[in-house]
Length: 338
Image 1 (tube, rainbow, N blue to C red):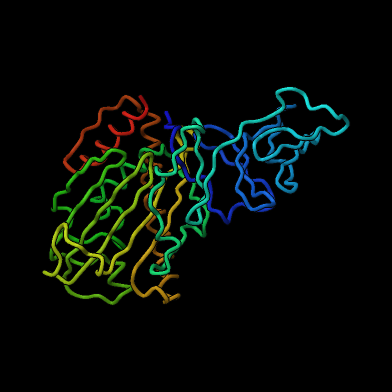
Image 2: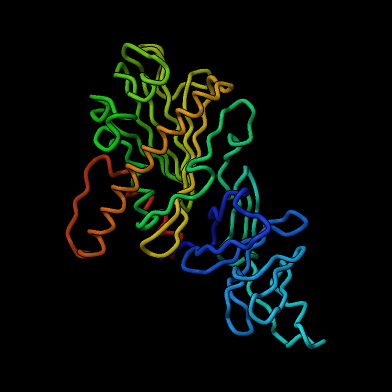
């Protein structure tokens, strides 16, 4: 079951061009396109005449024309031309979805458009901030996942898994022994883990030539429904403290969100941001390569989980201490479904 009165990422802005893009979001087939005036448009992906998907049509200026009998629809979903007749049939329109384009991403409000609230967008200004080096994940295309979107939330609020799932990139011995702090807010859940005097993550050691132990931290916050910001940073051992201002430390900010396609499939949109060596293009390339490995490892685990959940939906499962943030997020989602 989906949350509908909220924002999802529909596409990277660069995905929208002069040809329609078909994408299913929360079970709803949607035709996305960029109008001639530059605006991003999302319409129900069907012509109201004989149901051919509008994504099989053509963009004409700000409008889209059906590829079957040529009915043309404007960005509001209203039919404004029927070839061969001057009268437009009453009710000739398709559903229009509220859209916002921000931080190189196109966001869609699936539910009641009158309730769309831009203040509920996560603050992902990092993508456009010149003080940060930004890497759009997967070449600025979504990563398809054969799993329910809430499994992705669970994964990001339990970063103890990095020791076992990502030993060659993110994990380091001993970090899993440190407890997590869970903070539930009105529309989000935050997980914090501070790890003093531990080994640096292997990816940092390799890319930044680090040696010796570090103070590390993981802070993951998910804003409804699935917009996760991860602050993963480090400082020389003995120099960092929990809850202090670490803005001058070196750290990565990972932005991830899962957009539901169906109940058992979704899309991951992701970006990796860093505040150091921002002009080093070679380092950016190498971070992108390592990030791709990490995301693929996550998807492998999530899809394997989904396979078992689908085959054995009633199988008993247990909870352990590190599940506290993920369980808090599931309760928050359930509250907003009600």
